[in-house]
Length: 320
Image (cartoon, rainbow, N blue to C red; front, side):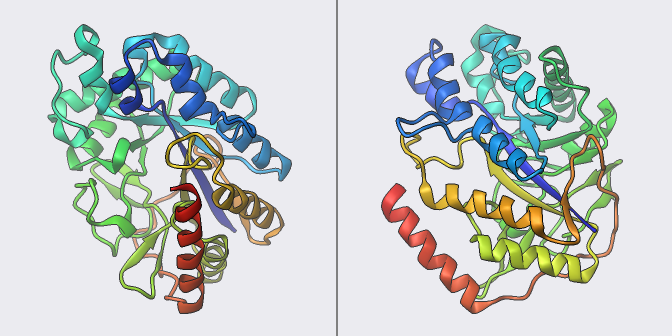
């Protein structure tokens, strides 16, 4: 049985508030969390509706840092519905909020846009504060973490172990030129122990156009996602992690539904619900176990990869 972790990074948008001012909590919630549009909502409440219609669960990595300017209530508005509906809340963290927080910045100064830009001690303080805010907002104590922008380093893993979190999911083998500075490479595709925590890599597939392609809802077609899950099942992989975001079913300007990605999410949920040997899991009920051996990556499939490029071109033309 493959434990599929459908992970949804759930976050207010720091750039929106930095540009529009601190009095934007409600607008930011509608935009980044609720996913409100004239045609309906497609944020976390809609995502939970779709998941539950098919009997599935998700892991919502929730960023608590907006509480620095809006208080814990802003995070409770996110956490409480997720917990009430039986899904999983784990810790996410975007340090961009520190530049907006002013006197409420717990470190007194901004250090950069990613957690890796901070010292070990500062990371410990931020992670501990984030976990406390989540719990004050109604979540169980988190056991897992994902850095905003995947912007973690090895000190992040040491800091997580120091404060008592057991799992991290910040290493994306399919995005090796991104912001993640954990000293792992594209060959590290299965959960492994590093610096006292279990690192759970983001899923990926081989791309006919070169390298690896990360398993994000906007990065793979639903056919590629199904193929990756079939491959994981056939290879006997214990787990596979997919990434999405609270706002991912919207166009880039967050004003309209991206119908290509929205339909993709529906199809993925429908297929997973009927797929033998694959079931969704959460960190609160089934912790990923370290394997150590590299997970065999799904080989490049030119027809699948090419059809995705066509689909993505249509989505970009219509929705930005």
